[in-house]
Image (tube, rainbow, N blue to C red; front, top):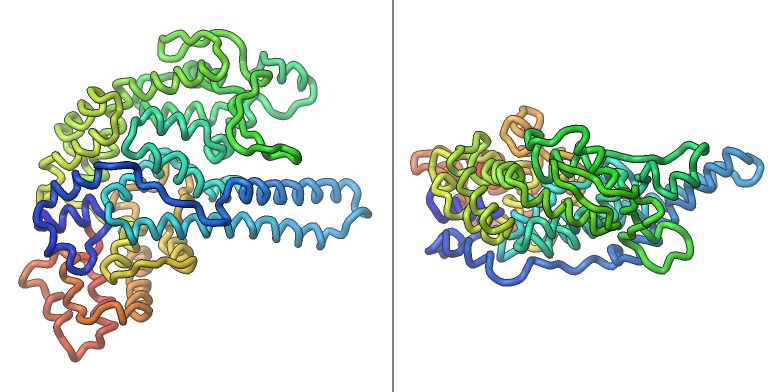
Length: 462
């Protein structure tokens, strides 16, 4: 693979027609994308904060009415309640569909595709999931827009802190319900059961967001961190609230000093949690864990140790400056080696196909197609996010899905391609590869030739 194609595919999101020929300085092109501000996008109308708040309230009210009806069946018709809840749920789905369309379209249209790839990477690293909880559904787009995008070229600790405070993460990993066992809130609830200390977010913050599973923490650290983060919750879910977002409620916060990884944190309310999160982000284990994931994504499924160490060192020396870390990735010789290969995930494949076909607008149907490919936006099945290795995406059923969708795309977008041979600009194909002859064979329908290019082995790699 030549350097231009490596820059366009490995670091970028796939080549557009004519882009490969215009790219004279691949590394300079990538580094130039890291200059300037973050890749912000405007929310769709359905993604406005008050629209999200109102949709969540309607869904919660419908659920509450259903519970009341179960206790007093004579008050309301069950069918009416079911319909009301279905309408409320549909509103939540419409929000995430509109948000996902904006996100996917940003990838397809972007003139800074390296930065858009970084947005996708960090969204997956600090993932939330619409597949886990209904209330996360309308918040997913806001999470990427307000947590990931503003910080993708900033400091890692600022991104993690923004993640910890966002309603999507607070709801997804249950921290919005976590109550300190010795807090005033717990004392008022004593004897009534219900909510208590929840360790979910604290555990994933240590294992998946910062230190890594082998980062040197223990169960005691999880418990102490969970207590520090009690009181971090969401405001605006109840009727009458004027605002919607993060709130620190001191009555729910576990009082007292706590110890995490041997460091002592005095009780300072919300500041106690902010301090420990920043310290975790600066921990040496975090630099190595994050560097390993980055090198895996940009170099190979089996990441070379020297490359990991170089990126980790930049992470440590820059105190998590993600612009500097991203530059270090471009400077890795291993990332440019012909021997290093990365199999395209379904999202990668779809975006690359749309860019190769010179698509500029994305509709809800394209977003829905990602579910058919088993990688819907913002819906991983576990807090560790979507997998990033060939073995997770190259099974026969997955490849058959791609072949079917390649034919669908070829039929729908045939008019975007004057000559199927132009697709060779986006693919690393040796001179003797049979695909070259097939794409030039006028006896084969043009639609079939486009489908062959998108479904062929070469297009599955970046």
